[in-house]
Image (cartoon, rainbow over all chains, first blue to last red; front, side):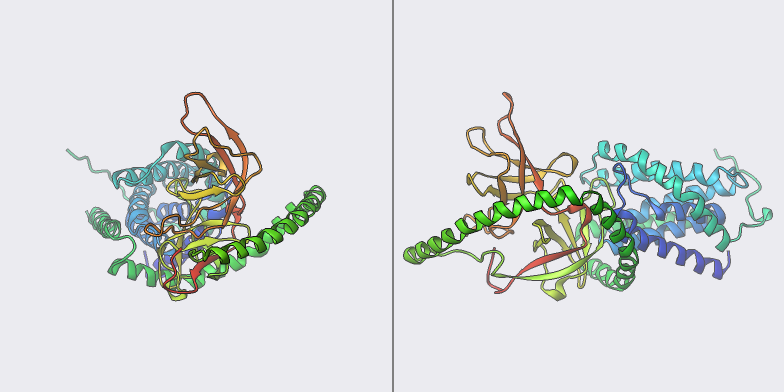
Length: 174
Length: 281
């Protein structure tokens, strides 16, 4: 990961975040909303691994919460874990697989929705799971539609790493 | 090892931010910092909205073409109805003013003449399925503060629940936490406007012995007792009753209200700032 890569990833996520809060959040289709930030984060994390994924998630969440004057840290927390988890998948079993971005986006969309619900619930705020579940399927479909072009763009800007850069062993714990 | 340390640090920082933000959501150092951050992001959000606007206008134009003919007929009928209603209203207003003068009637500031409209654009829209909030391009520097009512050209939209220097968060009428004291313009029945199913509203707490008719206009109730001033001034249009139902086991009527403001596609709104600082709604 070079400084240029970091700047590119930050710029990508910044643009995606601004587009998300100002444009995409308005596109309600069957109750679902396309999540460009999530798709961009998944693309960056798959191509650059855990550390960049976690940092990118934290940064994107901070921008979202700042732009919407929302509860600072809430989106960052969930996106940090999401970025880390997808980065780990990209470093290990997900590498070189064509379906990895699509699978990652579908799973992360699901986990992100649950993550936000869980944090809101733990804070004692209203967290109705019903509406969230009803909108989940359309959201996943729209995110999957966004995945191919977004991943292709991110892949052009952040060239995939060499095979030697990936993790080559798995450490057993316990 | 490094990656776990990075993750742990980021999670701890996020939790710390969340804790501080949760404890004081509308004031404090972190809120000020967030407000300055929001100010810095505002030009980018404005630019994004401007870039998207032609596409949105194009879609709206095509959409309106498809329904233009039927809409025109409906509007012509409405104009005829309103013209006859306006004549009746004019004489009623005159009579009302005369009676107030005779009674030396005192009232709080009324909408819209006692309020200054801070017209502003919408910067971001609700993104979650359980939060109905928008961010507007005006804040405390324009006289807006928490609980400032926000309207569109059609009717009430919501109220400010978090105010930054140049941006503010508006909680919409359709948010589950929103509750607006309201009344039926015709029958004078009072209730609470809450969110309903499918983007509609309900006029809650209306007992079964009261009368609300389909087609009645619902407006804000305003302050009833000066000791407990309401956040909304009297007379802001909210919506029209589309259905009234009841059941044997329910204590209240089920009054479904269609909001006048098109809350799903708001471009610009106006925050109502009292003209006189001492004036309370």
